[in-house]
Amino acid sequence: MMRHWIALTAFILTAETAFAGVRIKDITSTYGVRDYPLVGYGLVVGLQGTGDTLRNAPFTEQSLQSMLSRMGVNLPVNGPGPGGAPGPQNSPMRTRNLAAVMVTASMPPFAAWGTTLDVTVSSMGDATSLMGGTLILTSLTGVDGDVYAIAQGPIAVSGFSASGQSETLTHGVATVGRIPNGATLEKEPPRPKSNDGALALELRNPDFVTSVRIADAINGYARKRYHITSAVERDSRTVSLRLPPGVHATRFLAEIGDLHVSPSTPAKVIIDERTGTVVIGADVQISPVAVTHGSLTLRVTEAPQVSQPAPFSNGQTVVTSQTAVTASEPAGQVATLAGPDLKTLVKGLNQIGLKPTGIISILQAIKNAGAMQADLEIQ
Image 1 (cartoon, one colour):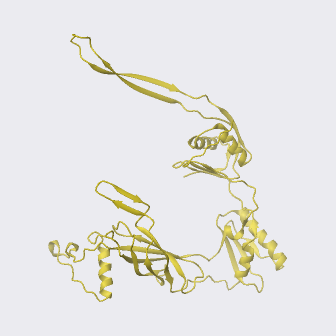
Image 2: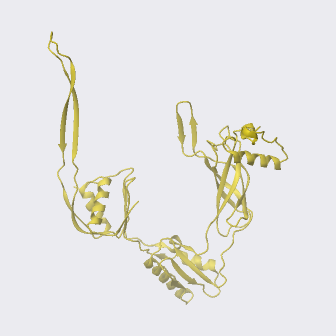
Image 3: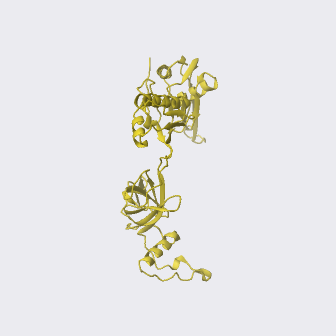
């Protein structure tokens, strides 16, 4: 009788091979069109005593002094510490309502001046929570050092942390937050150049068969509409394109992006032993093998007993232990596995009626026996 098992932390994901195909724009990206990461350093103010400790985070104190100095507020210099050196313990500032943070964002391609971006704010010091804080005006720079955007605004934090003398409750991460539309683009990103009319599509999952199928689908469309051959498969990752005369790259990419192809997936089995997750690819096949899987259970029981001496005797009352050892082993069930397709393979594994850990052990043993025609990747 077939047994189906479902587990929260251990499961098998399967996929059928018969489908209509996917769009080209869902499995490829245009060469040179990418996001540009931005980064900045700033201060978050308005915290309710959950910010950085200035003694433990000197960079926060220096940033605060620099910000107040630019605003015309002059603070006394730190007094001498031990040995005459400047000491942060003599700093006149004792606030816990601000925190030093790193601000990151991703600038999409072809973004224009004034475009708003979502930013992520992460604490750098010993702040315990950024909830209720507001990011002060922060410049975001790219890898070339130029300022591309400025960020400011209240922070939305999903996690929280509450603690007392004997217990601490934490949910999520309270030291990381986001500001929706918190950054404004001040400089446009560099645009990819295609003056020579040459374009290229890059496959997100490189494969020679998929690359050829994409080129064939584009050429079939280009011959009917423009009477030219436009695509050439360069390798497993790249498909080169030639623009039709008088057609802009945006229009041509939009037209071929909706063409459907059937991508080829490698025969692979992914095993995550930490969580018990098994993912079996659609093209995985197993040669006919006989498999049995059993477990031996030993149970040791200690039963304390009291030895009571007879009345008026010189004996002593002692406690003895009686040990009982039992062994149990379920009857072995031999099943024949043969996987000409994914559905048959999963059916055979379910017939054995094993837990996910047993499925993982069997798949590893089948691979070692040379009966699995697929790559086995253990994470």
